[in-house]
Length: 375
Image (cartoon, rainbow, N blue to C red):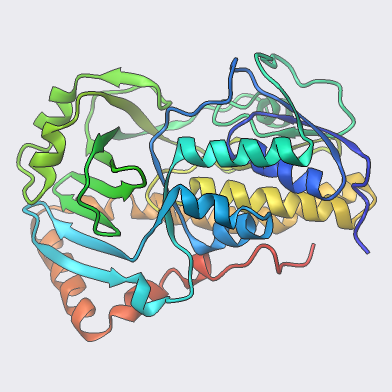
């Protein structure tokens, strides 16, 4: 029977989605978890997230269903449109996956739910605690994101590759809520938008450009730059962008999945292990999956080194495949000329003849159940 985590001290570095989910999963299995967070408060300015069924199975198993449903919206479809606003294809999630839980949520609301659940479970959260080097803890979990010090301790210094793409993100007030994610595809650029609870709308816009931007989500920009880059887009996009009064910009960098995830004492998860481009909407979902599997392995296997090796062996192949899929998808929305016309025509035909077949390409992502996977 599981129980190897009972009363074991665990230190988690990072109070984001990965760290808080891991803390809850570990604490619920009997561990004594301390989260070290560099910020003076656990707060996430972020923007929207799409939570797909693979991640929702974990969050539901952690007892968070009701709390999440109260602050999120269901996603019933993904609607692909061209830059003019004309429909290309609508992938009906409600029809083809009626039992699946796809949710749209503001990152800040997800963080709030996770923090409250962690504190209720008894997790000790230490704020305003920057970690410059890995603490000397018997079990140390690195959930410290893109620039993880614990990843660096395990793998050395690494240099990411700038993709030549820049992304903006913004949130606006919007009461028009078709419960679906919309993707507007134009030459060398695309824009994704979906509603959020509380009368909000999330916008992420990606442009191919030679101008280098810093990595990270906290760099403010002039909304006029976003509007200029997408001035030729039609449909509801001009109205949405006219409302943007605050926007952040960041460069998209391609990272390798970490070669080494653990050393028997330290382990990494989430962006610290496998930073991904945002073209499969799986960054947070992979972190949530990681958290469950890490806790399950540590609870089932008394030998810590063997447990961490098992965790890495279970998670690395799947996360590598998802990161590679996101890399491959990076240019699919940005086609130009005859290739763009041909691709959109094929999508339109597929949507009429076999719409379910388009969705089935991603069954391996959405049908995966981390909770049922044996550690």
